[in-house]
Every structure is written in C-alpha cells, then in structure tokens.
Image (tube, rainbow, N blue to C red):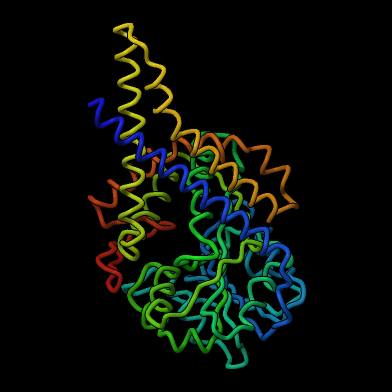
Length: 395
C-alpha cells in the first residue's frame, strides 16, 4: 500500500505543478482580455432568457438584462406555462424595461428538456431582423457591459460562438451553499484561450447564420442540454468557441444538501451523456486525487499509532492539496480582476474558493459514481431520463 501511495503522490504532485502552470496561462489570458478593446460590432441582437419558477433575486436578475449599454437588442423571456409562478415578475420586468421585451409562452416539451423546448420555440418565432442570438439564464446577474463584450468579437466571422461562465456567490452561510460555490469554481478555468472550449447556456452569443448552418435546432430536437448540444453542433462544423472572461456572470445561490446533490449530480450526468471526452479524464483525475489523500491519511495514522516518523508521508499527502489551493488562489485573482465591482464580496469568502475546493473532489467522485448508476436527472421539478445525446424521456 505504501508503494502505491508513493506512486500516486508523485503523479499528483506532477499534475498539480502542471495545473498551476495552466492556471498561470489562464490568468495571463484573462488579463490580456481585460485590456483588449471589444470592438464596434453591434448587430441587431435577440437576447433569449428561459424562466421557470421563483428563485432568490429573480426580479433583480431579470432587470439587469434590461440595463445593458451600447447594444441594439430586444429581450425574449420564455416560460413553458402561462401559470408559471414567475410570470407576474417576468411581465412586470418586461413592462418596465427600457428596451423592448417580449414574454413567450412555449408550451410543454415532448422528448426534450423544458429549457431546450423554450429556446426552440422562441427561436422559431424570431423575426428575420435579428442577426445574433444571445442565450442567458434567469439566475445570473450580468454587468452593464456584458452584452457588448460578448457580442462584439463576433465581428470576426470565423468565430463560431463566444461564451463565458457563471461564478457562484453564496447567499446563505451554510455548508451546502459553500460547497456548491466551491464545486462550481474550477469549471471557470476549464475555459481558456486554447483548447476545446464549450458553450455555457447562461452566456453564449452566436451569429444567427452560423446557428442555422450548424443545425442547432436539429441537435436540440431530443436534447435536455442546450449548451452541450450547441457545442456538439459547432464542433461538427469545426468552428471555434471563444471564452470571454470579462463577461463572467454572477449568480447568487442558496441551497441545502438535497439541492446541492440534485444540481451537481445533474451537471455530471449531462457531461457523461453529452461530453464523455470531458467526463472520463475528469473522473479519473478526481478519483486518483481522493485516493491519494485517503491512502496518505491511513499511512499517517498507522505511523502515529506505531510511533514511526510520519513527516515524509504528511508532506506527500498534503502537497497535492496545497497545490490545489494555489490553483484556487490563481483562479480567484483572475475572477476578482474580471469582476472588480464585487471584488470585496468575493474576497470576503475567499476560503470557499481557495480552501474548500481542496475537499470538493470528494463531492465530484460521488457525482461521477451517481452518473455511472443512473441516467435520471431532476431539473426544476421535472425528471428526465437521458438515454443518449439524441434521446430524452420525460418521466
């Protein structure tokens, strides 16, 4: 067992050093983007925001979508049902919006996710005047320059889409909410300047012509994942997805343990079904990290009980965790520079993003195991069975 531990610890240390180097590359990219002029491309934009149910800060989130600077756009709030509890809030925001806002009732889905169906119906109804489609979520709170920075790079017609990512800020000081914020944080550094980026449904912009040429509507027909299906469609055409870190989107969250497991299990199951090339290496990486810490802890306790020196085991056990914390700190620096307006709020909870992330791989392993034993996921009150990327069953 000791030999296995040494092998695993050595691998984790090498991987940790490599990931710190990648973290530095990511931070450099963020800083370069923050000093770049986004450009002057300002086409007619349709901003599509599916909504369902009441959630903390919903009205403020939706109002933020009406306050963007320097952009020629209209908003389309989409509900599956006219009796949705959020309808009164949505209609109030739409009525008071300084830009033209519409409320679309999409109806119930058939063999696809409710969010996907909402988007399909809304896109089908869009007038031809809209040149760019922007997708966002009702639980995000983007800044005033968000839309312009996300759309302007599409002036380069070789770009397939631009995207960004959410950053969770806990609204409640309980452990499940802190774990959710820590769980989400590493996803931000999965996107970067190089490598294969993926679209995030809460912040993606795409030219309408590319959207149609890529066959996204067909990809969405039986899908539960709007963003991974969009990514798959763009991947078939070989078009790039550009990460825009200056558009990182705040999302104020609060949850309990049931909500934590529902969200994290769903995200990993969706990844397994729609992006197995991401799922498999991530599962192996997190499993080996957790195994290293567990083996190291067992060896430390054994040495303590037998009164043998344990310093070298302690060092090898906790060095991977230290390297993980350094990566978390690099990530936090980049995020606070991209979101200066909430820097003090984020740094006030730095322990979540730097220290708690050391233990988050154990939660990820539980999510990976869950994705191996079930294809069922619950999303905003609806249970889906994800049979394949092209087949979804509503239960």
